Structure formats: structure tokens, C-alpha cells
Image (cartoon, rainbow, N blue to C red; front, top):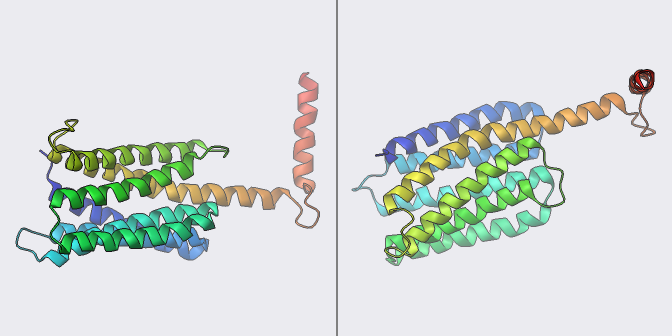
Length: 246
């Protein structure tokens, strides 16, 4: 049996820890995507921390605040990917969707809708956002590196977990893939994997991009766009050695 409260505390500490780590990296990198990602980790860490503090006797607003922060934090993660890959139009759709979803969640809680219906709605929203991240990383026509594929697979697994949880809540008694508690536990396990893989993965993606830019600056003349003297001799030497072998 998985202790959900302990998982919440682990996810809170992990996300806030990544936010602190990325704060130092963002100051030196100057990449706007890293700043958005840092805020997403801080918001998600706060959401899980409030969820860990929430108990049976806690006020309703505390639970509402935790889940609203959770949806907002996931939307910031998607926004970080959109910023990283230069998808300006996606952000114009993302923020209104996230805002409407949060308002809809608050309205459902305050009007007394059964909790399984509210949980299904929130799980569906998060699944859609995570699925969007997986599509961004695996989108057709792009040159996906192995790192992007690994992160995309991890996002796809979490998307399936949240979709299964939503179906379990909506079709209770008819959808028997897993019990509600098992679905809840599975989302926390995959959420932990999402924290680890995406946390380090996004940093590595940024480093991968910086390495490409540094390699381009080191080998290309900025005025003419041609290879510089050093790169020219490296390539001619490689061509000479190939010619000698052939």
C-alpha cells in the first residue's frame, strides 16, 4: 500500500529543490524557457506541499488552492516547452485554457458536484496538458534527439496514467482497469518519474541547445556564414585521411 501523503511530501521537496537548482542556472544562462520552467517547479512544489498539509478537518479552500496550483504548474511546464521550441501560438491557447480550467474547477467544487466528477475533470485537463508536452517532443517532421524521445516517452506514460484515472472516476463500476485507489497511486508513481526525468531532462535539453550554439560560434564566421580557419583545416584533414584510406 502506497502512502500518498509521503509521496506528496517527496514531490513537494523534489519540485522545490529543482526550482532552487534552476534558479542558479537561469541567472547564468539567460534563457527565458528556464525561467518559466523554474516557476513551474516552484508552483508544483507549493501545490504538493499544500496537499501534504491538507487533512480531513482542513477547510475546503486549502484543497481548492492545492489543485488549482497543480493545474497552473503543469500549464507552466507546457509553456516552458513552448518557449524553448519557439511556439508562440501555443502559449496564446494554453493560458486561456488553463485559466478556464481553473475557474471551472473552482465552480464545480463550490457548487457541490460529487468529488469523483471533479477529480475526473481535473485529471482530464492535466492529461491533455501532459499529452501536449509529449506531442511537442515527438512532433512529426522534427529532428528528435534521443534525449527528447526519452522525455517524450515519460510524458506519454504520465498522460496514460492521468487518462486512466479520469476514466476510473467517470466510469466507476464499468471501467475496471484499476480501482480508484490504484489509479491514484499509479499517478503519483508516474508523477515521481515525471519529476526526475523531466527535471534533469529539461536542463540537459537546454545544455544540448547551448552546446550546439557554442559549436556553431566556434566553427563559423559570423560575417560570412562560412566555416572559419580552424574548422576548415579540421575538415580538410578529415577528408585527407579518408582519401588516404580509400
